Image 1 (tube, rainbow, N blue to C red):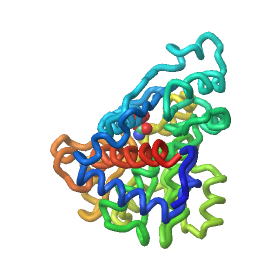
Image 2: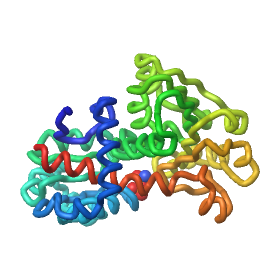
Image 3: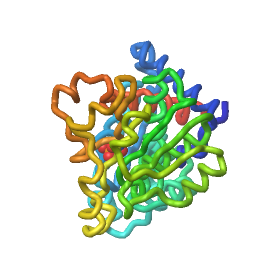
Image 4: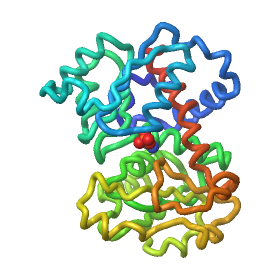
Length: 309
Ligand code: CP
């Protein structure tokens, strides 16, 4: 298996490596107690310049469940020495002497790569501006693999803000490695998927199209990957134009087959408006299982990054 030095972008994962990571995640989930000291004595630094619930806490939980320790700055933009003008490179040079691995979320695209260029310990990209969120894509694909027992041959709709959403970009890069995938992009006119991703999908012979009518595709897709309109990354005019256009609610949820699955990287706001009993009990609602899957995928990644290097 190819060795992971850093996790910066989805393109670095081969299909063989993906399936192997998924199998390892299944094994850790099944035999969790046997792994309680796998990372004993290792330290993860979590350096978050943007807000997070799932990514930061699941990485920290993954590290602790494997017996490791965590150093954490949850608001590094304000409470690290970045506020005094310290460069990202200098912060990384310093932190890499205190920890064995850094998981970092940054507001600028390309920040994780810059960090990896000066770090002598593994860097994990936990989201870089409008760039990528590769560990989210891994857990998304792992969720699809678990829910369907396969990835190949599925029809996947990506819905919402496809222009600023880094999770859909990273997921497209992973889907580009798979066979027989069909993608349907459903987004407001002003927040369409960018050309670089469409060109990548073309190069990898992945069939895709754009659609404006969400209800018309709900009956025929296997996965509905909903995303939030990223208010914090776009103008207020673009936000007002886009909000509320594509929503899954109690009216259109019945168009979705019982075998299909609704995914969302979370947090969700008004683009999913389902009653509590459906969110709690309906098998189609997969996004809470999806966020749990992140724990196991991140355990596997941490083990590779900390023990293979
Ligand atoms: N999906 C995701 O990245 O969630 P958080 O922003 O809560 O980490």
